[in-house]
Length: 283
Image 1 (cartoon, rainbow, N blue to C red):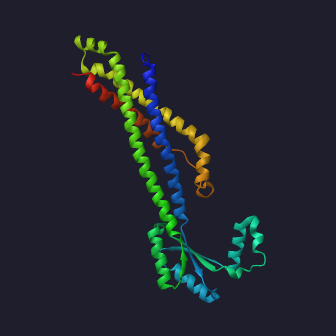
Image 2: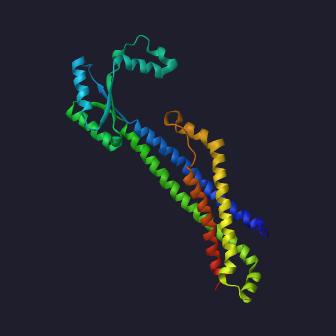
């Protein structure tokens, strides 16, 4: 490695760049999954009431909704409360509602589902029950938005896997050919070693160790680069994109995934050495 620092640097750098890009996709996917889980916990069905029911009728309606096996809790929002929330959301533009009474907004029931029933399919089934059995016509839960978001997460995972696989293959190809160049530079020495009785494994071992060390260095650099990118650039971008204030903190790669990246670097270097040695060094 000291004799060929340029070639060694190319192999280490290629491995590091490939693994850093994979780490970048993993960071995005992990944080999007965290956001998905958080949104899933907050899946809520809202049933709008055409008329404000009397106290007795409202209590009976809430009891029927709460009796459904999928429902965890039911909260009633009056017209006055709805107007207050509307003004709060408008912020500085709340003066636009001056002279407008709360009767323009409907009262509603906010229905929270149990954890096992927070998928779009289960929520749709509960909505159908509310419409059919309880006569609640105006029921919303954002099904189309949730389905699009889940499709986006799935596409992100597939895209990350495809790009990651391509990058690993490219890194393996470059590392293998880089090590092969170092072997060709020393082919006379290797030939002499074979002539004086050196075994194939004796000749191969230093190159295998070299490849593993290059991969190890590439993996360590990749984790360091990924943390630097996350710390100084990606953290703020993800916080803005994923609305971290509502979904919790943005997290870095788990320790297990960091170790997996380093192991992937060692594997790339070691396997790249094996593939290049197969043609040059023969028993």
